[in-house]
Length: 447
Image 1 (cartoon, helix red, strand yellow):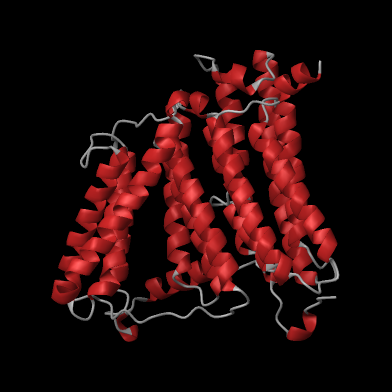
Image 2 (tube, helix red, strand yellow; image 1 turned 135 degrees about the horizontal axis):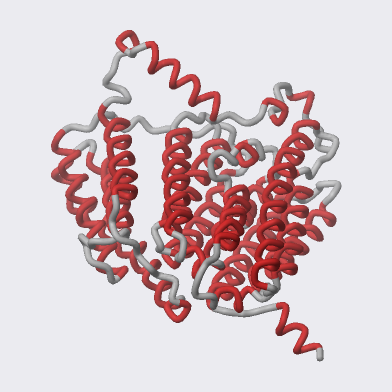
C-alpha cells in the first residue's frame, strides 16, 4: 500500500537524477561553507535546520509526479528560501527584500496553481507522466501551459520579473549561493519537465525565445554597469537564466539542463568565493582592441566554436536552432581570448588557441554528456531556423561589437543626449528596490 502511494506521488527519471545530484552537491558545498561562515551567529542552528528542510523540499519537487505534490513542494521551497533570505528580521532592508521576493513567488505560485487546476479540469489527470504522453493540445491546455510558463519565468527572474533577484543581496553569502545556483533554476526545471507539451506549441516556444533573448541581453548589459560584486553576479544570473530559457524556446531542452548545471556549479563557486567583498576589481583591457588582437581572438573563437560543435556531436553550421549555441560559443571564445592577446598578440596566440579550444571542448562535452544521458526522454528537438533566432543572434553580436569598439572610443562630449539618458535609465533599472538598500551603517542589524 505504501509503495503504491509513493509510486503515484513520485517518479524518478533521468531529469530527476540530474537535478537531485546537483542539489545535493551544491547543498553540501554551501553547508560546508556555512559551517564556518555562520559561526557565532545567533541563529546558527536555525539556519541549518532551514537549509536542510529547503534541500529536502527541492528533492521532493524535482521527483514529484503528482501535480498537487509539485505545487506544495514548490511553495514550501520558496517559503523556506524567503525565510533564509530574511535571516535577521530586525534588519529593515532584509525584510523588504523578503517581502518583494514573497510577492513575486506568490504570483508565480498562483499562476502554477491556476495552470494545474485548468489541466485537471481539461484532462482529469493528476499524474505528470500521464500528461506528458498526450499527443495533442487543446486551447485550454495551451492556456494552462502559458500560465505554467508565467510561473516558471517569475521563479527564474526573467524580465519583467527580475526585480526580486537584484533586490535580494541582503542575504547571507551561503543563502545567495544556494539561491543563485539552485532555487532560481526551478523555472528551467519546470519548463523541461513539461517539455513534451511545450514542443507542441510553436507560439509558446517563440514567446520563451523572445523573453529569453531580451533577458539575456539586459542581464549582460546591466552587469557591466555594476560596481558591486553581488549586484554584478545578480545581473549575470539574470542573463544566464535568459539564455537557459532561450534554449528551451529553441527546443534544446537537454542543452538547457546542461547550461543549468554548469551555471549552478559556477555561480555557487563565485558567490562562496566573493566573501564580503564590496567592490569588484576591474581590469582595464585597453578597449577598443587593435586589429591583430581582435583578428587573433576571432580565430580563437572560431576554433573554440568548432571544438564545441565537435565535442557536442553537432554540425558546425547546422540548419536548425543549434546554430545559436555555436554562435554563442564563438562569441564567448573570442571574448575569452581578447585579454590574452592584448599585449603581444602573435606571441600569445598559441596559448590563446589552446585555451579557447579546451574551453569549447569542455562545454561541448558537458552538453553531449547530459544530452546523451537524457536521450531516452526524447527532449532534444531543434527547431528550423527562422527570423526570430537569427534576429536574436544578430542583436547579441552587434551589441557585443559595440561594447568592444565604441564603449571607450567615444568622448564624453560627443555622446548624444538621448544616449546619456538611455544609459541613466538602464542604470536605474538595474538597481535594487530602494527599500532593500541600507544607506547607513547604523541601519544594519546583525543581532
